[in-house]
Length: 242
Image (cartoon, rainbow, N blue to C red; front, side, top):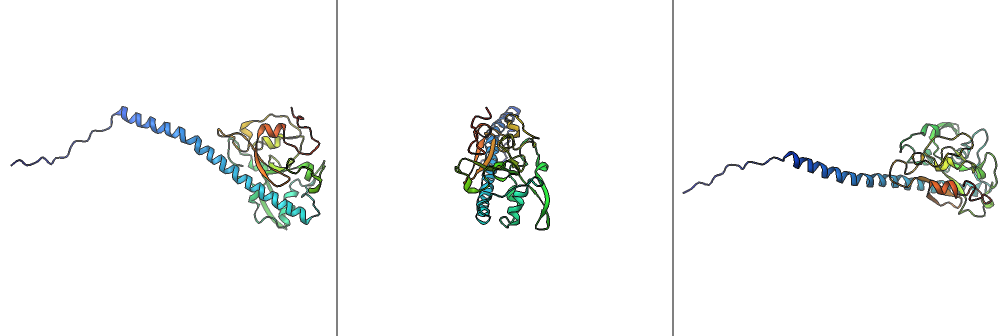
């Protein structure tokens, strides 16, 4: 009677070539997945920003209903006053709604330039104001449409959006299309730079900003549209930046 052999079989180790092939396959899969994941993060931040602006837009319409149809106004002494008026009136429980979720993403971080330290209802607060309001509506200067009812085409007129500063004048579209960059001083003509876009600056996504219109709807617009087409007031020439 033969006794079967019960010894363990020798296991063959991976060769160097096989290991390199496996590593190469993993690298290829990672290179395919990473842009998708990055794009998903950009889309998520964009969606959150749109939700922020819709809530601000709704609150502002409520503010107008209570304050004689007036837009909240800035002043020459305090450009962030339009924000503080709405907070003081009790429309927001947190200042985080004024902070764009894409503020700290991308190759640059200029958050400190948009940080406001002030007093609201006699309390010291600090918050990031990522959004700028149309100067033609809220001032402090050059107001053309002080009330909601003055805007005949509310679905076409820029209200507020991603911006390098709290006030967005029609003579400087750069503050909106390069909203992720530094705050330009005075009237500038810097062309759109992807690296300065608030949304889509550090990925393959289309670069641009989220904006809200006077009628309350918010959407994403690319840099070229904001530079050449977006309207701050109804008599503005579409081709003024060409």
